[in-house]
Image (cartoon, rainbow over all chains, first blue to last red; front, side, top):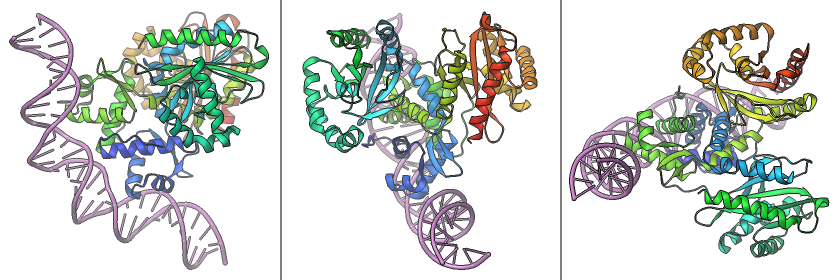
Length: 254
Length: 254
DNA sequence: ATAGTTTTATCATTATGTGGAAAAATCAAT
DNA sequence: ATTGATTTTTCCACATAATGATAAAACTAT
């Protein structure tokens, strides 16, 4: 986890590092010892920072098991952040329209470290299994069309770095070999959007188009998940065009 | 905003204060000047802290307008916190079951400062207008059954404090006089659950039951929102019993 | 251009956070 | 229960890291 070295203030940097470690760890939380080992901080310092964060409810502590996990305030901040003029609220209308037009499950994924995270989603008429599950779910970058569509438009160098880092997790996740990811990246670059037809979850298909920021770097993606059985000639292309149109609207509003 | 005075480390306390101020402010964000005025911090200090937080993406900065708002990482943390063994995931099944049994819009509200926040929700068969809107929406404590059900089971002292603090906002929000809130609190304490039938939003009714923590303090509530037209003898009582049953399950799992 | 406001950068000073070390608390095994 | 190992918590002298007065730079408005 490249814990962003924001040359700022030591204490804050350390607190941010701990938050990251806890967020990236098991949802059951982490013990002081674990965090000391992971962060390399002095035990006393670590303890003090953690407890201050608990005091502010940025972290919560399971008193019985003495484990630290993300606190109640994170719900609030997360929810508030989503209401602000960020990606989620900018995509809200698009998700609703796309769901309405097609009746399919629609989602907004974002890149975070080496993962792709589901930020928002609208369930379709028929319930389909998705890779990420509901809001907040994540998959390693490289798995699934939402994730591939972002990966495909990064620098070659960054792609290599991420795929190398994720190789094990991808294999672990769904027996995905890295060279398959490379093939999908190539195809996606050519087409402009990513497609998966029953390769990851039998019977389930997905299409996704990346959202680029002002600098042209992919930060998120919009996509559909639906049943392979629904596929008819031109359907995938049609879905991709719908996504593209919404993203043009979103990107224009930068 | 009683910015929790966790006798910890100065810098962290200040950072937490700034996060709170930004989270509670407009979703458009706050300028340095505004934050300096609100926090009482020295300009340079404030600036330094804010920029460190931006570096860690806990805050984001609109470079054009120079305004600070909650950052991308808050999405992530919020989403992760929701997946952890916290309230949201513990209530997930309950919300789903309640929605399935009744077909009504179901929601989980939590207390945060003097507000009641929507943490999660399942939309019902027919779309109904709700006070809080979608996930993340908030109302002043005292407005709506979800909020009243929590307020009703707090200490007298705390109730008084909160209602006094919220008086203006309640009046502003939906012309709610404080004495009406007191009446509702009394009724709710007697019944064990809160009810509103078309008083806040014409034609819309709500029932809510509080969730207490180990110490017996209300931390959240589970509720239904539905059309007044649906009401038949015994329906409200029935809904309350369904909520009660789910909450018994949730509280037992502490 | 000019004045007023807001945001950044600088830097000597010291209040603040640090970490070693030791005390409590907790756990594991007999 | 008793002991010993591990983990968490408290304490405090010390030095470093954060502070805030001040000044420079960047905007805004006139």
